[in-house]
Structure formats: structure tokens, C-alpha cells
Image (cartoon, rainbow, N blue to C red):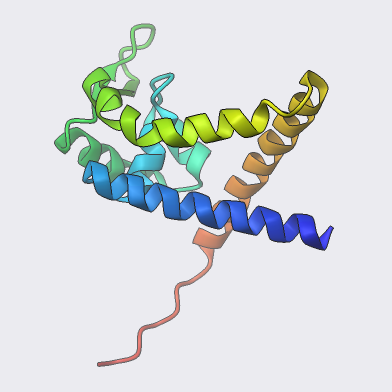
Length: 152
């Protein structure tokens, strides 16, 4: 169990470093890039993004504003309920990001190709559950008070 926990920390840490490096190449910060990733397959409301990330809706509004200014996303009214506003990733943004993510996609595909369908189902189940748990932990952590800065 200790070795598994260590491996998870290492993979998570490498993921953070990759996200930061990719975000820099796209002129974004890593939080904005992660939120962009969430809307690449399906538009989402600010509330849905907040729930998926553990960020506040106020923080998500700032993320959406920055993604729009950078030309990566746009707000649009929901077709079924015009009161709702969804955020959609723009195709040009996805084309710009694709070459940055392609090497990681290929490397992941190579690793996953070694597993059977049953093993892949187990890995997917674990990752899905780990993601939900992680979002809850992030949300709880953000509720804790920040330490006061020492006077300069």
C-alpha cells in the first residue's frame, strides 16, 4: 500500500508539472488549462465547473473570463434553457493545444496497451473514484483559512 501511495503522489506530481509546462506554452495558468480540459468534450456551466474542480463559482468566473480573453472559450446560452450560460471550448484553441498534448496521449496509450479489457475497467473505476475523492479534498482544503503573511 505504501508503494502504491508513493506511486500515486509521483504520478500526480508529474501531472502537475506537465500541466504547468503545457499551460505556459499556451499562455495560460494551470488552473485555467485544467478547466479548459473539462469543457473540451462538452460545454459546462460555471456551477458545473466549480463542482468538478472544487473551486468557488467566483473563482470559476475569473477562469472563464481569462479563457475568453485568451480566445480559448466562449460563453453561450443553453439551447434548452436560455437562463443558463454554458462555456464552450473553441475549435481553434483545441487545434493549438493538440500538438502539446499528443506526446502525452501517445505515451499513455502505450502504457495502457499492456493491460487487458478487465484490467482497464478496474483502472478506470479506480481513477474515476480517485477523481471524485480528490475534488472533495480540494474543496475541503479551500475552505480552511489561509495563513497570514508575515509583514515585510
